[in-house]
Figure (cartoon, helix red, strand yellow):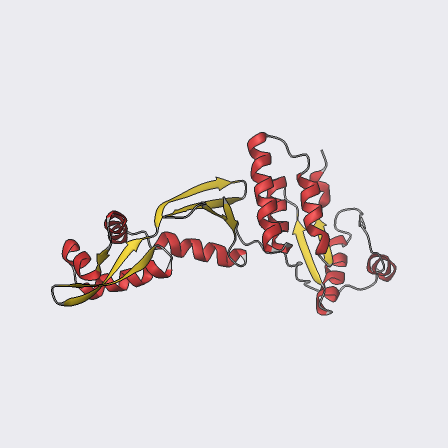
Length: 248
């Protein structure tokens, strides 16, 4: 099967919404008729009992969504008519962990097209409500590190504010910062899905496929290795706030 992904995740969801939005009752009737045989907008209008200009607008939208294609011109009753046909045999939606997949079966295509979609998730650091003062020594330790750093202390001491201040400086200098505040309801696949926003398109699809396999098989060993491997080209900082939520 051919696998692809459209642009960023926000573009993915917009594109999927447009695709499903084209599936109203009249358009479904048009697609059903065009799947049986090529027809002109004039003939479609006659069968639907509506104006040809109205059908033409619908055909244009369906063509823009890749659901209809032109079959060229024919001469009929002293008129030149353009014929159209449906391009798809079926569209299937499979809901995956924290994402979903569209499977498009196209007429004449040797392979189905799988399109992985996932929700756009923000990963911006929290905005500081006040300027952080002091903590200079801790800031030097965090800023001078090139590996993993654990910031710990009693609740309310200002750990999040300290790291958010450091993250704000990084972003000001053009460094990418991925921030995720852990919550009790978060799943492992949710965090992995959110991380895939940092991957290149082909790596993103690979991880989403691996995630789907892990859920189906009930085993997650190897998935974290896949995520780490895909992060190989990422240059920036990754912050997990409230990490204590993972304990127990």
